[in-house]
Image (tube, rainbow, N blue to C red):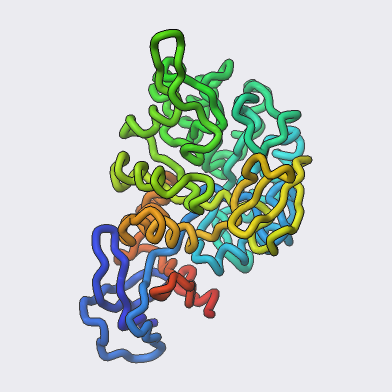
Length: 386
């Protein structure tokens, strides 16, 4: 298979060229956009060709939710997000009863690293229940609790299926949990947290290396008497070790703050996510429920029913890239990096995913100047064409 006349989005540049696919992998890159081809080929007519997007934080779509723990729900969710350019994703849970979290893990375990009609399922992101009740966001406070080994050990028995856990580092026994996550090969990510820098420094030392939906549901500068202390937001911006998730819909984080994040962090430390909930793909005004919390779809995102808080997003990864470029004036090459190679690095899968390089999986997205997805390849197989 040959893909010709493309603008190849590489980690550090965009250049005209072509590539060939053999055995599901990228076989060869060429600076010649129109080489002589034999066999099957497709001419992108100058369109962009990017590595497949990787979403580390995605709850649902099309009225379906990860918490359903059903194969048909996973299929509907991954099919929707594939059409938005996502080739790998981590299904994400909510603060819930332990039995329901374990039910999700049991349902996803046989599907790890498989595609069931949509994006590849890379694993599961456990978001909550070990979070701060002061920063609960759209999670159900009835199910928020402190971490205990009795609860986290059955979760970690699923091993590398657990790609990430979002937790509040200030909670009792949180440092022990962070160390257990690191030992398991999972990402300990701070989020839904009211921690100050005194709690965050030891968490960093224990292995915390990511910030969940940066700017959202996290502490900022505290004033105590005449003095101030940094919160999670400032800590994440300041520490080079921490990769920062960003919901790039222009609503969760205003464009000026999105730009600030890209300016503050190194190029490899911003990770675009959707945090899409089951309202993604549904019409504005549609109501839905997130594990007991009533929500509704708006023209650009999702909110709780009262309209007083956000409830995940309705994003695709393609729209996240577009918003970063058009509203925050992020260079396209940096926005694509944040949607592909950076999350692959966080997953420790950068040797096989995340960039257009010889020998990597041929997970590819073709899109045009208006950020419309034209085609998606997964392991070199054409899975979607508009």
